[in-house]
Length: 246
Image 1 (cartoon, one colour):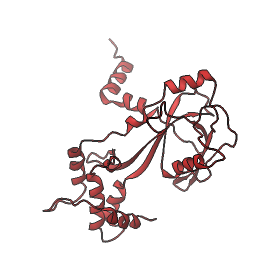
Image 2: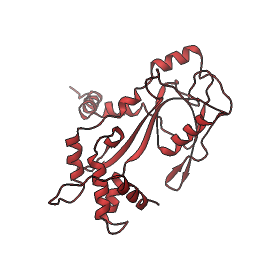
Image 3: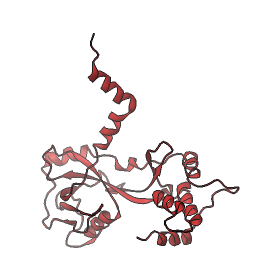
């Protein structure tokens, strides 16, 4: 009896979690080089914003894999990884030494999640999650504060948004991103209804790990000492952020 390799492959994916992970990642929009035309959708009620805000610590684990941890300070809670970040800068004697490089690795970086529909996609216009950093998000907010545009997420009088990705060496730049000047409905009543029914719960994406689990990871980032890691205040925060310029 021949072995069903396809069945084995599916079972392997099921046991490894790869299929689930890939399905989850497929919910996110991958920005292509050049112009990505999207319509940013509003949230389904007034209780929450159209975006979800977080900061991410990227930590290389002992097995070589990188894990993302949502910064607990976003929820006004103590964050052991922030404490480790500041401590590593204290231990650094040179901006390029081991401690400085570790600090840069786990630096909390802003991320913003929004529900969008891709305009120039040949696929069915399914709702995707747009995950962006501070630069794009600030441009979106600036547009909405401009009286010539207003609420670009409005389903009837809003604007499509052009996210323009230009590679500058290894780094993407989004300086040219801008809204389309013409206001127009997001789609037909049928399309709009379907999109609003299939919004991703972007606010549920910001899930905090248990404090003790994060603390264990954070303590593994710095050399052990007789005293515990010290929490850092706002003044230290400003000082260390200055060290990260460039």
